Length: 193
Figure 1 (cartoon, helix red, strand yellow):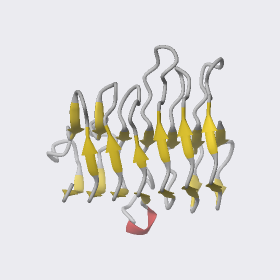
Figure 2 (cartoon, helix red, strand yellow):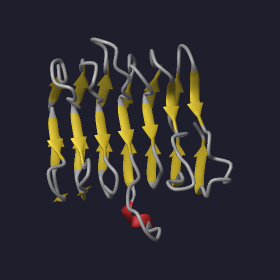
Figure 3 (cartoon, helix red, strand yellow):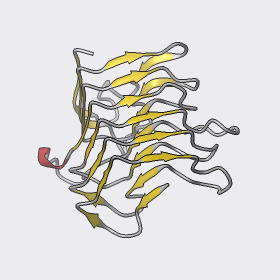
Figure 4 (cartoon, rainbow, N blue to C red):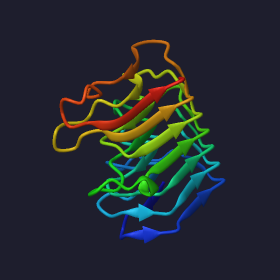
């Protein structure tokens, strides 16, 4: 796969790639991993086909602290299928930490996510993302969209989730646990989906 997490990185462009068969023998082999332990900012993940990963492999993951990235027009499906792993097709962790700055949100748009993710289709942990105009098609795992892995330490905040098409053939369509504001969540928009 593609690992852009060895140091803090700027202006990485991952476009027009076919990424597949990752994590078949290694303990972890995400197809695309941006910013795990370090940050990736002002970067692009676009027009990629990500598919057929092994048991310990997610599809596209954007790690904690990474912000101002554009994730667009990717096709992500058949993730974590070969053994008994559970990984979402796309996982976005908390973007910019500290005081809210609307210019430091990740933009996720016009992606086709699923089917056949071994866990959630799209999983947002914490917040500060704009997610719009995506097609998220069922999973064999949990939810098409999950935004419930949040707590008072890492509340889901400043998420605009708009104009997405969501379809799930089994399980829940969308998990919105934590959208009640009780754990510090604020600035959440879920509209016209």
